[in-house]
Length: 324
Image 1 (cartoon, rainbow, N blue to C red):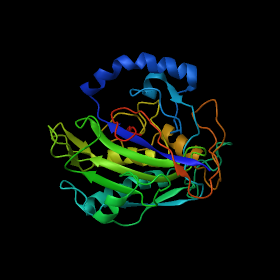
Image 2 (cartoon, rainbow, N blue to C red; image 1 turned 90 degrees about the vertical axis):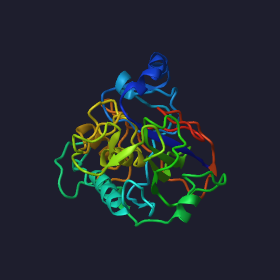
Image 3 (cartoon, one colour; image 1 turned 45 degrees about the vertical axis):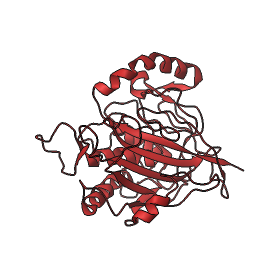
């Protein structure tokens, strides 16, 4: 029987918070060189194997973490997501819905080549073969029982894929610099994603408070601690779909926050189109120019839960997290 585990991903803001982690970088790069990093400025995929250090930044080494099986939703899936109906004291449900829909539409409408092998041009039928859609809001009872947000039994995972705001307490590490957290539940043996949930740090109790804007582009006169919700959710949607932090600093999937970063780069497009090629059932095998490998098939039945410590940039609750 296959087992499954939760992987956590968090988005970090840029700034002095990165400095305490610099001393880990040489060790991380050395481990990657020994254990399976691939040098290439390209997209990276989240895998079933934990990262070797809390400060792993592919943009520093120019290499993806290649150990383990890459994660992905079953080919051809339509994946529902739901916002918590309470939304945030800072963001109305209407605005949160609009922003989340826009973020996921960015990935849904990625213009993939007709053939990822022959470089064909993109057209209206060239969207990724996995699509996410808004399934409407859910109430606090559903949020409180969601197995991606709270601990459940060892053989339990749910089909609710939620987006929630954390206005009061951000229980993950580094309250001032972690912007969001995506929890992915997946098959340890296969890499098949069963569940994904996104938490947004909207804490008004931190010092300074984490402020959010839904205005695009963000006004230039906003307080320094105000963050672009659409940029955050566009990045987190990439993690939701199985992408890891990229080697390219211009990518949506770069590990550090950049306001107004809303348009998929060639790197992002290559990643989403390789994982979910238009009309395809599987992603292509690993290529020397990228960081993708073929995903495993979907397992049958409900597997047992395995606790997997996935160490990431700034978070460490239950297992580990990172802005992916």
